[in-house]
Amino acid sequence: MIKYLKEDNFYDEVSQGVVLVDFYADWCGPCQMMGEILESVDANILKVNTDEFQEIAIKHGVMSIPTLVLYKDGSEVDKMIGLKSKDDILEFIEKNQ
Image (cartoon, rainbow, N blue to C red):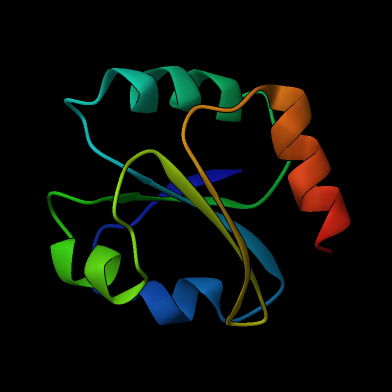
Protein backbone atom coordinates (compact mmCIF):
# COMPACT_ATOMS: atom_id res chain seq x y z
CA MET A 1 0.00 0.00 0.00
CA ILE A 2 1.38 3.40 -0.99
CA LYS A 3 0.56 6.41 1.14
CA TYR A 4 1.69 10.01 0.59
CA LEU A 5 2.75 12.13 3.54
CA LYS A 6 0.27 15.03 3.57
CA GLU A 7 1.07 16.68 6.90
CA ASP A 8 3.92 16.75 9.37
CA ASN A 9 3.00 13.40 10.98
CA PHE A 10 6.02 11.43 9.73
CA TYR A 11 6.76 9.78 13.08
CA ASP A 12 3.18 8.63 13.50
CA GLU A 13 3.34 7.03 10.04
CA VAL A 14 6.53 5.04 10.74
CA SER A 15 5.92 4.24 14.41
CA GLN A 16 4.43 0.77 13.96
CA GLY A 17 5.52 -2.16 11.87
CA VAL A 18 7.80 -2.12 8.84
CA VAL A 19 7.48 0.94 6.61
CA LEU A 20 9.49 1.66 3.48
CA VAL A 21 9.86 5.43 3.04
CA ASP A 22 10.49 6.80 -0.45
CA PHE A 23 12.04 10.27 -0.34
CA TYR A 24 11.36 11.77 -3.78
CA ALA A 25 10.55 14.92 -5.76
CA ASP A 26 8.03 15.36 -8.58
CA TRP A 27 10.66 16.85 -10.94
CA CYS A 28 13.10 13.93 -10.46
CA GLY A 29 13.16 11.47 -13.40
CA PRO A 30 14.68 8.55 -11.47
CA CYS A 31 12.13 9.20 -8.69
CA GLN A 32 9.29 8.85 -11.21
CA MET A 33 10.73 5.55 -12.44
CA MET A 34 11.14 4.38 -8.83
CA GLY A 35 7.52 5.30 -8.18
CA GLU A 36 6.39 3.01 -10.99
CA ILE A 37 8.49 0.16 -9.57
CA LEU A 38 7.15 0.72 -6.05
CA GLU A 39 3.57 0.39 -7.32
CA SER A 40 4.32 -3.29 -7.95
CA VAL A 41 5.91 -3.90 -4.53
CA ASP A 42 3.64 -5.42 -1.88
CA ALA A 43 4.76 -3.44 1.16
CA ASN A 44 3.72 -0.61 3.43
CA ILE A 45 5.22 2.40 1.59
CA LEU A 46 5.22 6.05 2.63
CA LYS A 47 6.20 8.59 -0.03
CA VAL A 48 7.72 11.85 1.25
CA ASN A 49 8.08 14.74 -1.18
CA THR A 50 11.40 16.38 -0.28
CA ASP A 51 10.30 19.73 -1.73
CA GLU A 52 7.30 19.86 0.62
CA PHE A 53 9.01 18.30 3.64
CA GLN A 54 12.62 19.52 3.43
CA GLU A 55 13.14 19.50 7.21
CA ILE A 56 12.16 15.83 7.47
CA ALA A 57 14.49 14.90 4.59
CA ILE A 58 17.39 16.83 6.12
CA LYS A 59 16.77 15.36 9.57
CA HIS A 60 16.98 11.85 8.11
CA GLY A 61 20.17 12.47 6.16
CA VAL A 62 18.65 12.47 2.68
CA MET A 63 21.34 13.97 0.46
CA SER A 64 20.13 12.73 -2.93
CA ILE A 65 16.94 11.31 -4.36
CA PRO A 66 15.46 8.85 -4.73
CA THR A 67 16.34 7.51 -1.29
CA LEU A 68 14.56 4.55 0.28
CA VAL A 69 14.70 4.22 4.06
CA LEU A 70 13.31 1.23 5.91
CA TYR A 71 11.81 1.84 9.35
CA LYS A 72 10.79 -0.79 11.87
CA ASP A 73 8.61 0.32 14.78
CA GLY A 74 9.81 3.92 14.40
CA SER A 75 13.54 3.21 14.10
CA GLU A 76 15.59 3.53 10.93
CA VAL A 77 16.92 0.11 9.95
CA ASP A 78 18.65 0.65 6.60
CA LYS A 79 18.91 3.04 3.65
CA MET A 80 19.24 2.64 -0.14
CA ILE A 81 20.12 5.51 -2.47
CA GLY A 82 19.37 5.76 -6.18
CA LEU A 83 17.14 3.97 -8.63
CA LYS A 84 16.82 0.26 -7.81
CA SER A 85 15.10 -2.71 -9.42
CA LYS A 86 12.04 -4.40 -7.95
CA ASP A 87 14.19 -7.39 -7.00
CA ASP A 88 16.68 -5.13 -5.20
CA ILE A 89 13.86 -3.48 -3.25
CA LEU A 90 12.26 -6.78 -2.29
CA GLU A 91 15.62 -8.15 -1.13
CA PHE A 92 16.26 -4.94 0.84
CA ILE A 93 12.92 -5.29 2.64
CA GLU A 94 13.33 -9.02 3.25
CA LYS A 95 16.82 -8.82 4.76
CA ASN A 96 15.79 -6.06 7.16
CA GLN A 97 12.49 -7.38 8.50
